[in-house]
Image 1 (cartoon, one colour):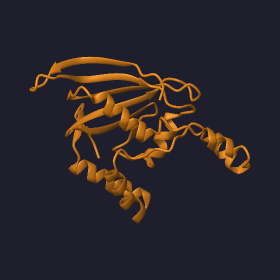
Image 2 (cartoon, one colour; image 1 turned 30 degrees about the vertical axis):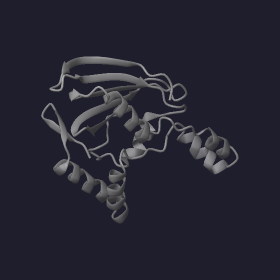
Image 3 (cartoon, one colour; image 1 turned 120 degrees about the vertical axis):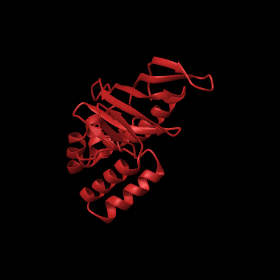
Length: 190
């Protein structure tokens, strides 16, 4: 991963006397080419996925760090060839290592450190595959943040239709997952 900028905002002190944050903002530079819209499209699988949210510009997801929910927002500022992601994470009394946690989760989930140069070279010699590779250039292979989430997704989405699987995952997250509330709407974590 490339250069990372980091900005702290609204800090406080927790009960152990450690400095805490309510909001952090930083930038990530994924390996090019990278397109957030396509990568999130693959990660979400269905537009009614309430865990992985996309509004056409910003990807949002609630993650759990040390038992506390925090909402992460990611927007792509740079082009596919020079990608730059603006990341914001907010929650109650974020621990000092929140940036490391969020960076690690996003790197895994969005595949920001994956270099597909060899794949693109291979597709140049495969006309049908090359056409698809060009159409979807910048999409990275996403992964779930935890093995547990991957297993539950595999069970729900492979044993039934994908649409029913996402519906079940939504219900599971809404009923049992922790959530972040914004303007009277609860956004669940997995």
